[in-house]
Image (cartoon, rainbow, N blue to C red; front, side, top):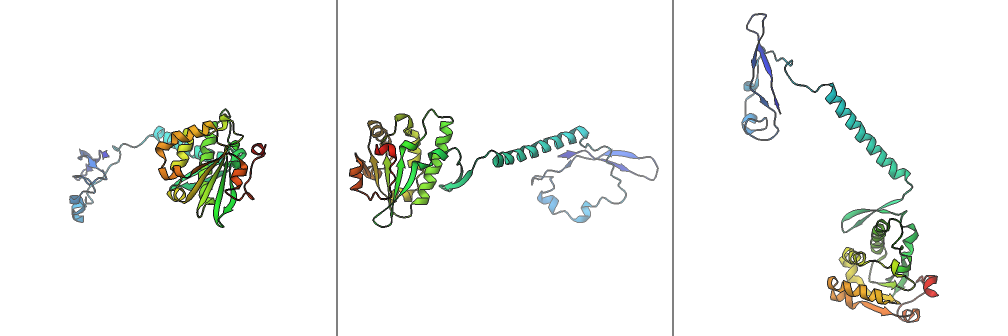
Length: 264
């Protein structure tokens, strides 16, 4: 910033003579002539001494007027009020937020909007002593024509991925209950692709089987579209099961919650 300064000299008389001094460069960069340049830093203290015979007048210096100061204060106050309002909205909108870390990135989940759909994922007990059974019931997904569908599915997506990481410690399998699920509740191709891509490498490796119960033509087609971006190892873990009796022959069913609509 160049500030023009007027340096009045007093040559022994009462009359002041004003001589315009060269612009003073207050740049903070290490450029030639700046206060942070190496030449300036190496200057002796004596060279910076202006002496007592110099009287610096600030009359000629430009300072912000009242309107500039008022504008700054108004904007500062407005920003402060906006920040308070945002904090109030988080406390007063009746929402419950959950912070999760997925892939070393923090996300916030709107738990209120997904409350009716949290049963979409559940723990179904264990097989082989300590290996978890994760149940995904597609019939609990929201209808595609519901209000704020994309917002709900985005938060539900984060909830499913974060819950999966919490439930799984060792090897595990996923039981995908596709029965009693109308097409309007089926997850889209993009949603399923993101789920696969966001699953941690450890979870992909520890997954032993992906069982699809009551597979429909639509879900078979959807999975067929996903094959180009999923590994051959993952594809080999997919198994189709056509009845609950057949499922019971593969895994213990004691703690697997089967929705009544699927039972019917």
